[in-house]
Length: 363
Image 1 (cartoon, one colour):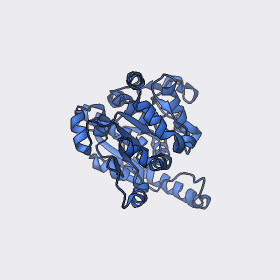
Image 2 (cartoon, helix red, strand yellow; image 1 turned 45 degrees about the horizontal axis):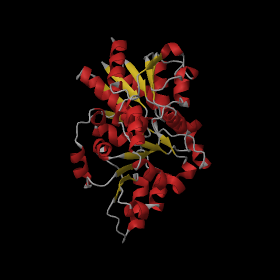
Image 3 (spheres, rainbow, N blue to C red; image 1 turned 120 degrees about the horizontal axis):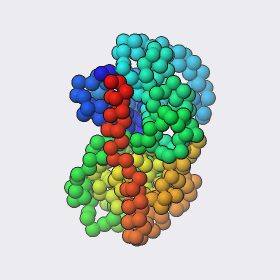
Image 4 (cartoon, rainbow, N blue to C red; image 1 turned 45 degrees about the vertical axis):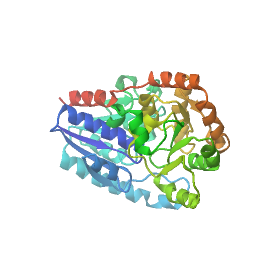
């Protein structure tokens, strides 16, 4: 069997795609899987690291802030379409899976035009434009939220949740092991701050604005800054000592970070939401305002409305983050309620559900 997986751009697209590929390999170790992503994006590093082949396309999105960069878009799109046609012809997949992102459109369109069945995996509560367009040709659309009939043909929808990394879905680490890994104390509270795979400027500013208060209160912070922000943050901290603050560009062992944390401060991208449901951690969501149709707020509100999380507006984060963190840390009943309610929304075997259906479609 041959499966082509197209898309990427952020961890929210890439890690579910890898989880699906790993689940396919568990069903059939001989299955031939080829990823197609965007050059210079996160997938070009993470996919080979997971043991899969990937081809990069010169795919790019529309730049709202740097308009002059859009002048090259038509040429990049033409190049993507020509290369996509050749990739599909050469690889001859039995099925093509789209996970969203810049590269998803050209490669899935090329596959469809060559008669290859296509399926989509939509991570968010608000469907992306690319997936909405591709859905017209799709045989199946795997969704992670209720109410997606407003975007897709209801007869094509299959609710499967969002696939998460195997180490998080099957996390057997102890909290003592997790605390030791990060050099943390068992007698002080732990906050995990994450802004997605690329980092979040607002969350970083909010931690920095209250760093003295966090340290003085003895609150330990595992702080994933994102690689774009890390050097500037470390420069700002140069010569200062904050024993409870642990900044790092990227948390490689997120399974241990979740296990160590008492509460989490996070963006509300689809992957983060799904991982936190499985980790069953009390969370304060700070949705990014810089996404299409404000879908991160919609993702977060789906949980807030079920008393499964708290929400802090991006515009209010710098002023209110420390107070919200302190309040939640001191309220054990609310932590317990959040943990139980968010855990009830988890779909643990999402990748296996999707992989099984893909294999059945091929057969």
